[in-house]
Length: 259
Ligand SMILES: [Zn+2]
Image (tube, rainbow, N blue to C red; front, side):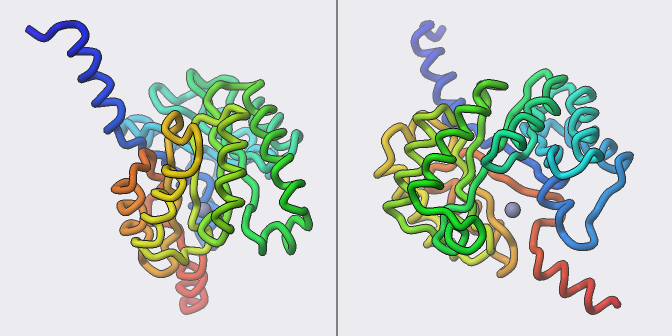
């Protein structure tokens, strides 16, 4: 018979090895050209994912439209076992809307993100490094007011300066993020680079061992699966994925060829 302490250690071991499947078919997948779903279709897909035992379902982007808000709320009501997640940009309106939408869920998560690469900071957000840093802290803190399950994403992480990425990831963890997602937003990384990036964060960021590291790889170069697995090998424990993969350019090309 195993002693209680050995049992606890074994339990801990299993927890550390668990890979969390985070399905974003209903959010990132749905944003692909040609992949838009009706309200009923979204509920059907969510019901299937929940019954399959998918750990986390990203059900939508509640601030985006009334329809998205309602879909997330309905999915939050119907889910029996999955965590239901709503996406929010780094502002209070988005986060409050996501917080409202996931309220009926047995277990709800807010996923908040901001672009951290120079391209995103300067051209999309027109914010300095310090301003983005402040938004990270404010948005994660706000989200924690709704749920203790908060995911933070460094959008375009694979093109972000390493020193700065370490700083913002550390800030998100200190503000209460429980999952840190490292997206390859433009589907640009190679598996060895993505492996090195996760290892770099694990080595340099204090508190990284206390959170779940997540992969979010786009399939523009056909490397999403290989990159995600490289991330897992480096210690990530959540894979963000969709049914049929996310590859905006590939989808757009197929659509263009059809028309
Ligand atoms: Zn994505």
